[in-house]
Image (cartoon, rainbow, N blue to C red; front, top):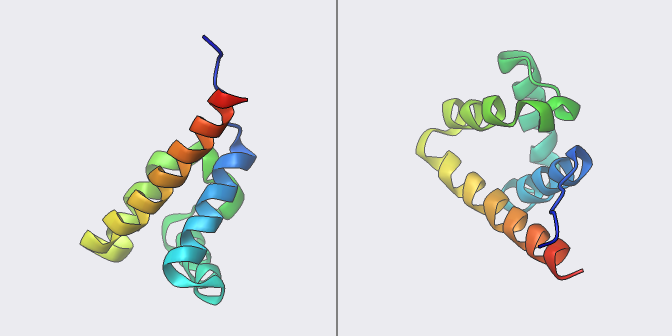
Length: 86
């Protein structure tokens, strides 16, 4: 069985695309601003702090964070499936 690898840049791209899809590009920058200011998570640090990032989304958006997480997970599944078939 082929080993699947997802690097930090892939995860960050997926997070970017997901936030764009849910909120739009302009609002994505605002979310990154609040993540940095309130939760001390810089955009580039999200792959290393993915759990903290998800918890921060829950604090920011409450139950609405589930929508964001679902979009991220769907894109992760798709990326991993594509990697598996290569």
